[in-house]
Image (cartoon, rainbow, N blue to C red; front, side, top):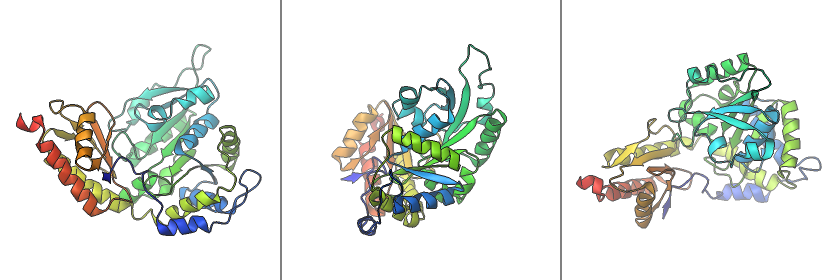
Length: 348
């Protein structure tokens, strides 16, 4: 079975397992775990921030960011299909008393003009707008990279309107690999940035949140509140640190493999790529209703040995990653062509 459901499916490499087994640990809640501290310092340096904080998950990192940036009862602006809004159970409302004002982008990308006029007036009747968030790369958009000029302009607009800026950079490492623009340059426009180690980088656990020292001090308090304080966390931080040091450069391989899948979609009747095509390691395509639903198409693929996700009624996602080889992806591409060729859309 070739599993292309997510880049979170990777297993630790032998070298990563060795690093984890040999990790120097302490109690990261009582005072400090040396390996966690090393990971945090390395992450902050790469992102050009004063400090960083290790988290169990990207969802926790994002939710702590919006909580610290916003007063209870205020709102933040976000793209309508972003992870914070779609895939985190509206935790901003459940845990922090916040609301989201969503704006529909194209392939996950917002144009600066779309945000004009969205900051609420200051009066007793209105919720207060405190924050704008972006996601790079954009998951539901198909691994879309936010154009740097858009990022600059949106963050400049936010600063002019006294709004904080948070970047959900779970796959920021993919944006760096695809564009050659360093993580620090992307991060420089934001007050806080979350990054993930357990997606493209292949670590088993963990994300980090970066920002100023005072912001991270508040984030640490919130992490304790959310149950994210971990004791001898150096064992898992060592895997993340190894991934950060050794797996960032290889992400271009995943991107090349995704292009093989893109070609298969383009060759296949009844399948259409998302509007942004394939930019990184995520391939999103749409199934012609003549064929059936996305879930039915996914079932046919799995019966032929390829696993994927139906992310909408007619949309399917495939993700390349560390544990699938070029040969695996080429085989998956042939299966995709064969299944599509057998569909009613081909006959019609």
